[in-house]
Image 1 (spheres, helix red, strand yellow):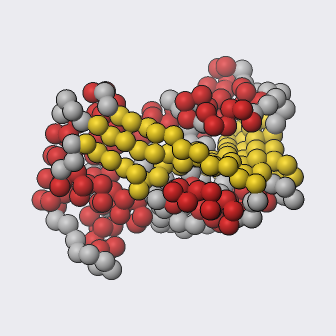
Image 2 (tube, rainbow, N blue to C red; image 1 turned 180 degrees about the vertical axis):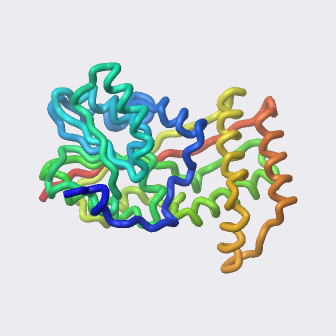
Length: 284
């Protein structure tokens, strides 16, 4: 079967909310299991068959492959153009137990009970229906297998020192994420989502990510400026606001951009986000 051609069409609203700029991809490539999935480390062992769903450019996928060898890892993402980086790195490092496929988290192109572990890092919040994806994860999980999920809970997002324009920026970006099909605050109910998906044995944790050095503050601000410079942001917000609370002008948007840039240069700038982490085992 030609999986790529037969793959069900995704909802076109559901796109990776951060986009695919060089800066975003550079950030994604720096991720490792040690830094971004510490909660999973005690549960990894050699010989596992792993699915990394929403793998992006594959740095976590390759790390998982190193940790479970001689097991195997498949990285799956809706945007296959990102795989080139990981495939080249795998060839360079001689990592042979990893492969990549294009596919949707809603309809995984795998048989039932195929994996010992399904891992999804910063993936489900980009979907309008995270619960549907979790049920699909359960389908491809072996009896006794494990799901591990980690996502930002954007209801905890804090920028300091707070200003009215920064507060407006935060609201605007969350709204823009939603226009692109994301669920930016679903993770605050991570464990409930796992239970609702049919799991009876679950665990939940949280970790804090903070940005309080000049380099990290500037990197974070650059990400948000990327959102605010998206060509469709005013159109998307206007379409949503016609159903809610009013619109925003291009001059107001420019003022917000200037405020974000000014914040990035402040000696007291600080950012805080809570990441939610969930584990669930398939018992039957």
